[in-house]
Length: 489
Image (cartoon, rainbow, N blue to C red; front, side):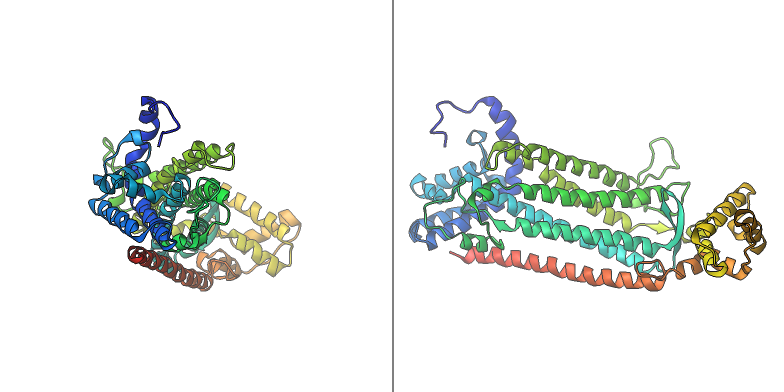
């Protein structure tokens, strides 16, 4: 394989390029390479490019290598890559005259391009499945929380009353979009480059559609240069992971803040917490911290891959190959984060009483008081906003509770601000400031009223079932393709 070169590989190249990648590549790609070998061999036999007798000897040797297992494959970094180590093991079994025919009509370029897509789609499917598991857990909590009133926050300041179910519906909506991005990425990746050769395909009469089908791809890629040059799917996969991790990080950040003593509205279970080595009172929500940090790692992987690719020619090159370096780590980080988040969500305990009392007392209900002034006093919303804004400021200065707002107070402030007294009944004021009634009145599409959130959750649940069916179907397809590949010869 080094016939063109007159010297051996330098020890530095072996130490810093080939050796570090071999074990990881064997663990990750042995099965995929062997599947590609068998599919390619099956096609060569069916096309008459190699004889059935030769093909059967190679296939038997490949099966023996699979039976022996990846862990027993002898690795020699002087052979550069996993493929050449596998080829060497094959040749040791059947000789170069027979084993050497397997590489007919293909290159390492299209081989590794195919393997990378096969590995990626496996990781993507695992992540999609884990997103579904997390969505199921959140949906279960949300369905039990339709009437659990809490404060929503903008700028991390009390905004308006909602329900816990409404908040979780928002998180579920984001995760639904995350799932869809992964499926779109899966479909982009699930196209076979095998048969593209080094860059200009081959003069052998191969059947690319046969190998694509045997390996479970939806189709064969339409251009041989694009087949070996394209790495945009790496960026697409990393982008999808980055967006998912960003959403998980923001959700984690909310829970992290709510778990503080100052908020005290949620507590994570002991099984996902840690204690201080010196402060015995501490209960640290460490899973949330790790998820937030792992989001940074995935972002870094995306930046790294983009930087590797941006000034490469549209063909095969080693710097393009370097774009994969942190892809596999990113897959691992995302999968770990989803498992950690699911484990954490299962333990969450919300302090529903404190959530309600906080909403009752933190003036988050007064937007509805402004709405009531608009409706009952026939003022513009801007005038109503000015009245309520001054009212809140005065109540806080006087150290009075929002529950102490009454008709007289409204008259006093409105006279000062708009020059006329506004007359509202105490019943109308109390109804506006009551968190439960406040939430219940917001029944517009997408709003927090229980009747509306129930509709949101029903839609989210229906989509969840549909998405779960798709993942199950893909797993069945993969299993069946594996069986058909073993029977193809």
